[in-house]
Image 1 (cartoon, rainbow, N blue to C red):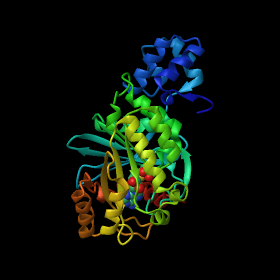
Image 2: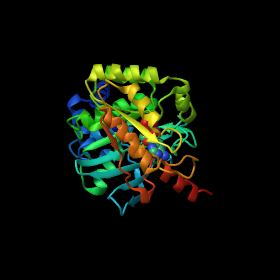
Image 3: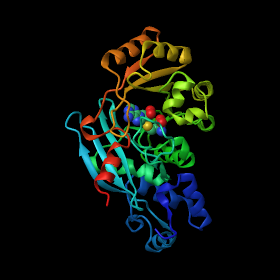
Image 4: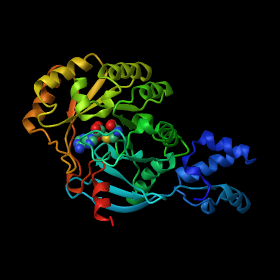
Length: 348
Ligand code: SAH
């Protein structure tokens, strides 16, 4: 887009500031913000509340991000819909819409690829390509809403990418979707999932945005964690737990620990008991995720006896625990799988 800046990536506060700097009245920023984020307008020319002159002044310096739906796959099993989006530079990202009883949940991406290198995850296989802008993150929601003619009620940042590795844009995104001139989503309806970038967990706590923080734990000792998650070489479990306690104190929000059960790696009763001693006494919830078998990795999903045994052990100890339902298993709905498949089929 030449050297033009994207209007969709600004928070309302930023937009008011840059309009003022350009000699445009700040109330115009409110109008532009509302038309972009509430009325889903993607072309400056279409903001009909502005004069022709003002539109052309804005158009000289700015554009509005507008990602394109490349493909949509509908699960016949559970109503899950998976989207592949094409970005302006030709990169591809994916998002998932899951219609739950308590509302429509969109799982969206924050980066193209990921550099965290978790051994069981398809998104990270080719490394990080680039961060998404706030506009590209939020546009996934708008495109899903427009395509399905629905309102998204919950957002989970659990698609491709590590949200805390794209910190500034993710914070902007949170402020944009929370804004009452935008889709006005409560922070409590947003979950951010991280593999545990400890300093950023402190930063996030200090923002005092009461979103749900979800930690991808997946192991109960540092040695075990290092085998499957390279980030464990940088931050220990003790440091993560300490940061989580700080987050809980600061926000008064319950943390979720995600734990992917991998056959023979982290799924026996001893692991469950170690998990209990790590997290006991904390305001938390455990979400057990049966591993999605993906062709890129050697790990396999735990069997049902171990999954149930793990959940029962934690429940008996008084830890609130759920086993995640597998959604969209017929459409490669787990992170990164679909993009990889699409790219390998369309290469060359
Ligand atoms: N980078 C963030 C968010 C993206 S992944 C994070 O690490 O939390 C969202 C969740 O799916 C994480 O808990 C991740 O570890 C998990 N995940 C990745 N690949 C998986 C797979 N093949 N099966 C089950 N869960 C997986």
